[in-house]
Image (cartoon, rainbow, N blue to C red; front, side):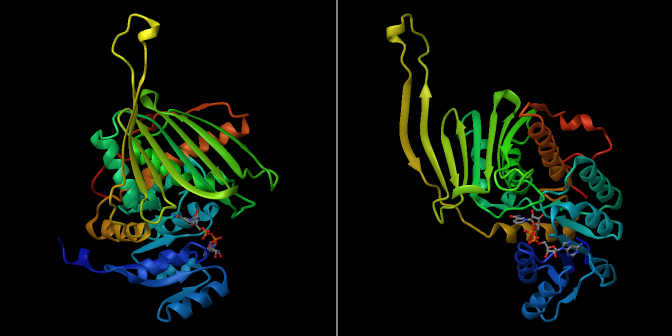
Length: 359
Ligand SMILES: NC(=O)c1ccc[n+]([C@@H]2O[C@H](COP(=O)([O-])OP(=O)(O)OC[C@H]3O[C@@H](n4cnc5c(N)ncnc54)[C@H](O)[C@@H]3O)[C@@H](O)[C@H]2O)c1
């Protein structure tokens, strides 16, 4: 490997609101990364940065970051700003890690992917769950066939608040679940239907149910809500051999694998003989070596830049998720009618293959 590619990556973080501090902390602590500057439009937030990291430069204008020798930026501003800020940063030659959702429409996401491609830049979306050891374990169970043929995946992400008056709960929370579903199944759905309601703030849904159909009749269901008495973060994968439940609220026993299933008799001649056999086997709680997913994600961004490799959750992954959200948004506005999603491959040859190794 060339010597220069192993030097520390100079990073700026844009947006120091609720989530930005977690990114800043990880960048400051990680080997291979060098936290140079933080930008936020709010002076009070920058004061906070200075208290914690006195040597880090701060500015209310993110464009000042173009003059401080950065290699990369991490963008943790509100979603409606992602496109303009990321475009500007990439046009100034900076690698970008953009928080989820990468943009609010697919044209913008596509445009970012193209800029990254043309300029040989790493463009990554902050799909934290793709860097989560529990999700990785589920992925191995699905890919190895341990669970058998996957029948359906159910995802629940509910709690009380935090309400937004701009973006509905689907765009806020469902990117996490969609990233998990698409990662586990390795493909996006071919149709989606969404139902929701705005209970508190008119015109902004605070509860949404997404129903998705994937290849081979696999079903995906996502329930997101800001109006629920319980904080639930749960993914259930039901397969023909076993069933797995990932409960992110569990501090230690995050995954339980149930050796449960139903077998149909091979042949019966009379109704009286026809009986399903239910299997109630062991419940296994696998040991998961847990690392902070955000730390793994930030390290992956740094490594992708240093090794010139395409990030696992690259811009194309971000785009694929936005395409599902966009179709679901259409369905929300059309009484829950199902909306077909064109296969990603039909978008045209101008986009890079999602599994390309090099930037
Ligand atoms: N990966 C995760 O688990 C996770 C969790 C929470 C939030 N997020 C994402 O992080 C992003 C930020 O969310 P948040 O909850 O921290 O929002 P927030 O509103 O709390 O913070 C955003 C900050 O960005 C600043 N800002 C806005 N425009 C700016 C600009 N042009 N230049 C500099 N600063 C600017 C604001 O002043 C604010 O301090 C969103 O995309 C959100 O979806 C991700």
